[in-house]
Image 1 (cartoon, rainbow, N blue to C red):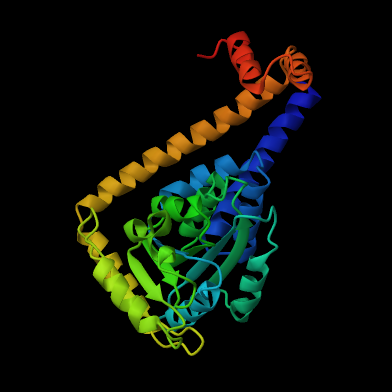
Image 2: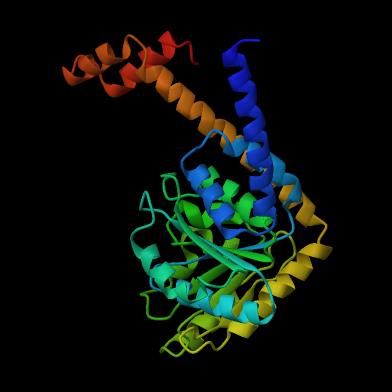
Length: 330
């Protein structure tokens, strides 16, 4: 056996033990290990796939709540109140705040982290903000993988916060057990309620900042507009004033009702199966898209076609058709 072969074997053995210890640390709820794993996901570390494969059998125990809605409705303050009240119930809580605009953790979510910073020293609370992965405002495979890490770490409840930004409002339905839509009075007209299918995806509607004028009218409109969902769940409407904590207990009660409902719902397993299909499809499409993109950019005729478009000899659609023909893509 050569020295190089021995080195490879030694590295493989060391990695196996490191991986085993690392997985054990995550399963025990070690916050540093959880943070490292999510950073590996964001950095697309090649070793993270093996880590998730070992953790995945331990997932499925946490209840995942998506919280979304227009900017300025007080979502982060509301989440802070939820954390406080859930901790009084001795629940272990995770928060994944998705930033649709920043490639790192800047923008509005920096304020979110500051508002929740009172929980930083609590070992049973884990808060992380991350980029959506530039998925046109939607939720990427980074989010799904990070949820697997948090789920396997022994948390009771995971909150996924998104700034209501189009596709993310729809995508959140595919990765959570309950969707909470946070609204408030005085945001303009009623379009905020009906836009982007909010009435279709919401399981619980929260009229936050209910001390403001117009909250009773919005509450009444939401009640009258609510319809039974495909899984037979009747959406709840809650009024909260997160600045003083009123209504938070009612929101927790509604979330618990949703959790109990799903335990008895025959359609829940079907929804989980559909979400798994969607996840597999999403990963395949994402990986194929990256591979195909590199193949196109590295094709010897690609630059020539770009030059022809620049000189107006052909248009971009013609160039795309020609490159598809060269790559034999129908």
